[in-house]
Image 1 (cartoon, rainbow, N blue to C red):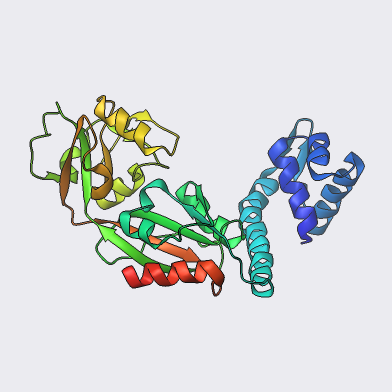
Image 2 (image 1 turned 180 degrees about the horizontal axis):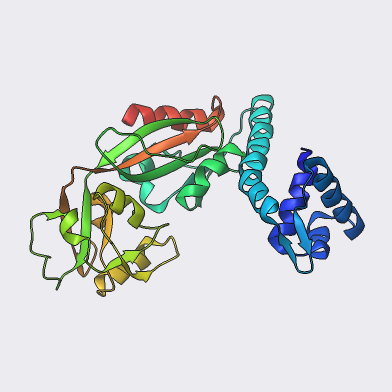
Amino acid sequence: MDPHLLRTYVTVARLASFSEAARELGYTQSAVSQHIAALEQDLGAPLLTRRPVAPTAAGERLLEHAGPLLLRLDAARADVARMAAAPAHGLTLATTPTALGPGVLGALPAAGVTLRVLARDEIPAAVATGTADLGLVDGVAAPSDPLRLPDVAPLTTHGVAEEPVSVLLPTGHPLAGRTGLRLGDLADARWLDAPDAALPLAHLRAAGGGGAFRPALRYEGTDLRTLTALAAAGHGLTLLPRSTATGVPGTVAVPLTAPRVVHRTELVHGGAPTGTAAEVVRQLLDRA
């Protein structure tokens, strides 16, 4: 398949409009229609209904493949560009908020760093496509076990930090006086669903062998102060790295004692880092 035709199809399907897709892509509407017709002829199946504009069953199946295919093409271009380019003096680091532990922060250079706080699933793609030089992804795992990251491109990962996890409770919570908590005993508690700030509820379900872990409130931001304020106000429990959970006003951080899991941070990069990125990689691996 011609990737130009595939990009046009994905854009039309996303916008549900030939004219809007033409405007976004910088083509004429006639050119967009020709691209879709050529792709349909190539695949031997109609991909879109015209009124309204919507994917057919075959089109829906193609969309499942299109995202990874186009991402791999962008990643290949970025990988070759990295090899051909001169070493960069600055550094763009894509990270989750809870991946920036003390050890990571100590490895960053004094100047020239741009931090981009992204959702966990977006970070490998940002590194693969060259919009970030390095990535830091975190999650809950058994000690020394690697995280399960999306397979978006040939990327290299290194474990750079592990620390215990704690349940953040408001000071008046009935369990605030405990010395430790079992995750299985909290499956039916009120939880904060903050997938881009706290450790995601899906990680808790996997670590706890199932359980409901139903959200009482969903927070779609990345600011940790907002998250911990919600926990302090009693809107739900949240699981955080010990260093992040300790000392938050109005809360108590109770260690998670079972199952035996840790907060793990992994460094992600493509190819062989150069310049500032190479130095940060060396610093992080030395500290690990």
